[in-house]
Picture 1 (cartoon, rainbow, N blue to C red):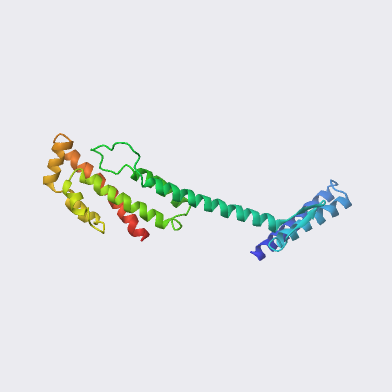
Picture 2 (cartoon, rainbow, N blue to C red):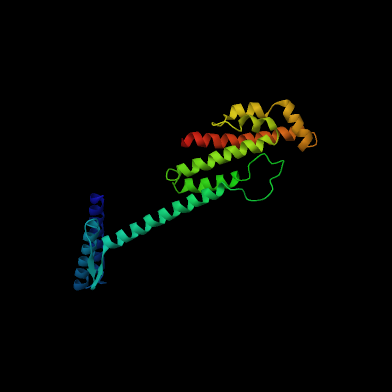
Length: 221
C-alpha cells in the first residue's frame, strides 16, 4: 500500500511540473506563480505518499487531522454495521410469528416462508449470514415444522407420523409419505372437488419449499 501511495504522489508531482512548465511557456503563468504551483503540488504529493503516517497537516492555517477523521469514520461504520445486524436479528424473530390471518386450506406453503426468503436475500446481500447463523437456523427449524403442517392438510398421516420426531425427515422421505395416491384422492375430494391434478400440484409445491429450507439448513450446519 505504501509503495502505491508513493508512486501516486510522484506521478502527481511530475504531472504538475509538466503542466506548470507548459503554462509558463505560454505566458499564462509568471515565474513566481510557477514556483508556487510546483510547491503546492509537491506538498500534496508528499501528503499522498505518506498518507498512512501523516496525522495532520495545515492548509492556510486550517489543520486537517487525517487519522482522527479516519478513526471517527471507521467507528461510525462499525456502529452502523452492528445496528444493521441487530435489526436483521429482530426481523428474523418476527418471521417466526404468524401474521394473524386465516391461512387458506388450499395453500400448501407456510405463510411465513415468503417473508423469510425475502429477508434472507437481504441478509446475504449484506454478508451478515455468518453473524446471524444461529438466528437463521432457529427460524428454519420453525418453518420446517410449519411446512410439514401445511403439507399435512393434504395428508393427515404426515403430521401424525412426524409430530414427535426430533429430526426432520429428508425431502425424499417426506415426498414418499405425502404423495401416496390414496391420501391424495381423499384430499382432492375434500379440498379440490375431486381434482387430483390440482391436489398433487399443491403438494409438490409444498414439498419444494420444504426441500429449499432443508437444503439451506444443511448448508448452514
